[in-house]
Image 1 (cartoon, rainbow over the protein chains, first blue to last red):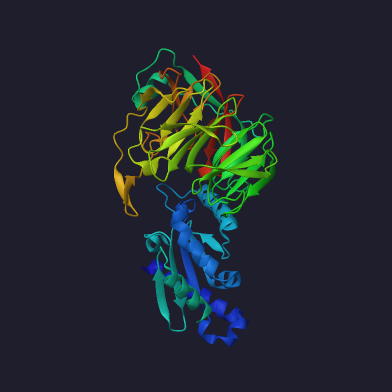
Image 2 (image 1 turned 30 degrees about the horizontal axis):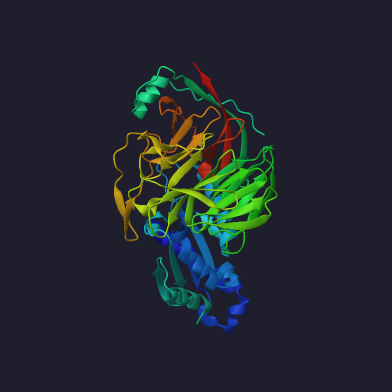
Length: 157
Length: 318
């Protein structure tokens, strides 16, 4: 729990940093700090049906908004000791996946396995709103309504 | 070009015992000598290659399922060009899963599409060959004819034999698959006599068929029990793989790569002669999802989860 708490703290601080840097958002103060954390099962990168919802979401969210308000975390399972080579392989696969899928948000690899407990269901999108909107989580498959909801949340609608 | 001497020695009788296959007096040690590697964890050249083929000049062609392209590398492993991309347009792929080069032509297929893309050796898209259903596997006979495992919308899963212009000459129903939805989960290799071999991804079964499509022999090479089925998106289908790949060497020996249900998932390779007799086995250094022999009898396998291709010479020792 302590670890999860520190993760949320880190994400909130990151969201605050986004709010400070996004001067264009002064016109829409209600979207300041909103951030979507996208947990992705790296072992599913080659599974088209598994990530079809994520790709649909990325088609709906403008590239600029993806870059500024979405952060990906690639999680994966290891049965033995941590293998740095595995993380490098996942980074390569993510590069290839992004090139084909038009993914616009940056992602980091969870080689410390901090997010394992959050990603038991595979891919998930968690939106943070430090201005008091609370947290919300979506897991695929994303319906059209869910994509609209997530997009609207990120765009401050 | 990496030249590493990797000794993968295996006591033949012990290996066969582990694989559950009777020992054969003709078995011996099999040594793998790596002589080339393409891609790698930091190269960004291959992201998840799912098929490889080598043309008469030694150029490599890969199908890459993650960036949805076909790629060409030179004989020394240097990247030359790529084609395709994700989409439904001409020459594009939803998921490129296989490639086969013959003569001046490079064929590539998509697991979600009912056609085969035809490129020239410069990867310039030429045309699409419509197929009766989704293509799961394809190989080319020495005379240029093609064999493809096709899942039709209705009817039995089959291997279709057809000419390079797409004209179907024969339809051969597959019998080793009890669920028609899994027909595209096969490996297929054509032999020099006009026959072919089929390996089933979710069933421990390899078949040899003659040029008329008649069954010559059938084996359960890994002697696996029936795979448990899982409920996946409403379908009860097997979840663990049995036969991951097939390859034919220049001597006509068939190599069978075990899947996740093998004793060493993705690494166990069993060797049979054309009559179906076990003649050897070996372990790959790391798991692979694919096997392929080029015309110089060099074995191509995946490594690093599909971001690397490694090529080996096989040395049979007695």
